[in-house]
Image 1 (cartoon, rainbow, N blue to C red):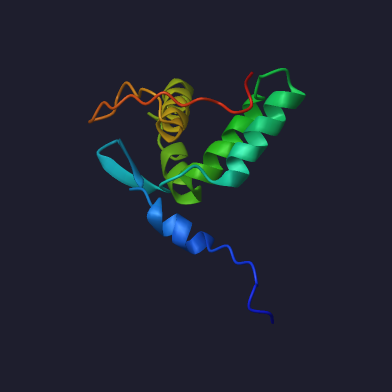
Image 2 (spheres, one colour):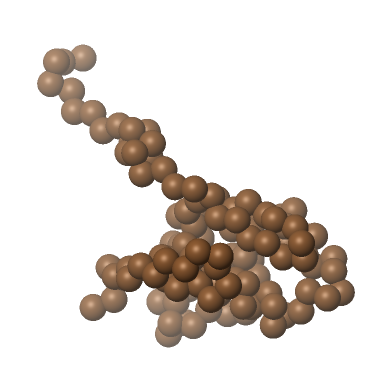
Amino acid sequence: MSDSTRYLDFDAFRKETEKEPLIVKIFDKEYTLPADLPASVMVRILRLQHENGGELPAHEVIFLAEKFMGETMMAELLDRNDYSMEVMAEMIKEIIAAYSGGAVPHARDQQVVKVEDPLVE
């Protein structure tokens, strides 16, 4: 190997940009979600929006929610008779807003950050 090997250390980048996990409280229980929306979820959202004129099919929203909420959280919530589609839709919307840096109406600590979407011209 030569002395001029090019090297990118993304572990260092990840450590430098590390964020706190997202905590979601519902039905008096707190769930810990990843600090960032998984790339696989965001890429799928962008592809689906492109393919469907900006809309996300309902069945895909449920699939994507399970990806970032986790199977355990989703299963526990769906087991409840008092977990409505209205609550689920609002929860998914607010979780995505929290990941995007937008205003989150039910957050404990309101911090609004404007995030420019690099894909929107």
